[in-house]
Length: 224
Image 1 (tube, rainbow, N blue to C red):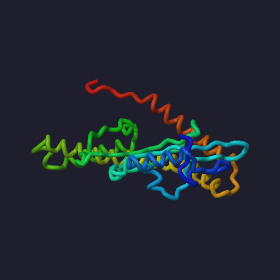
Image 2 (image 1 turned 180 degrees about the vertical axis):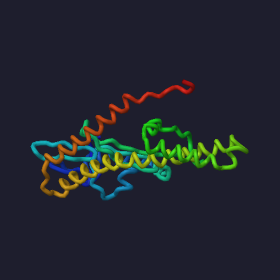
Image 3 (image 1 turned 120 degrees about the vertical axis):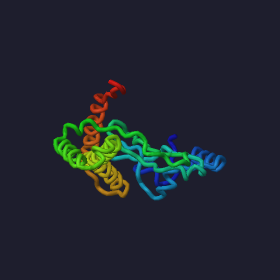
Image 4 (image 1 turned 135 degrees about the vertical axis):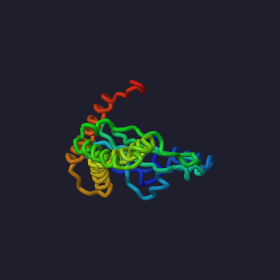
């Protein structure tokens, strides 16, 4: 829908107008008791979902909506935009969970790449040698083995998370740069559009690396 719902949804030469489309959408929201969950949770935000450089000006708007029944609000865990380089439109991430039963921990899959980490292998070897001193090693080997697996799992999760933090921080930093430029334009500040293109290039490089890694991810069938 090429319609904005408030002045907050447009930035640039285009202006918000309360035209027929606007009134129709509002009427539908009222009739079906639905609302835009993102705008409800971000009532004053100037984050946009579409942007394009036109005649050396960054034009931005938010013309997509995440309408849900108001009664579903309690089930929405989070909703946010994620910017990308291959489209003028940003992704919308909506996480909603209707389950009332608390879930278990789920299935844990060991990250085989950790076996290439010398530090991790050394820690596991030391852990095994330490655990061998436990009386259960001789008295109850199956119980001892279950305890060892649990400790290896905990150690592996901690080390894997520590290694993933720098990557996550990097993409979050790029996303913030993107939004910072967007907000500056919204506030009528002078912005170097070369910087905007530079940030888009960073996003593109990150996306290409992620895509290449995804292509080489092969799930090995159980039992092989």
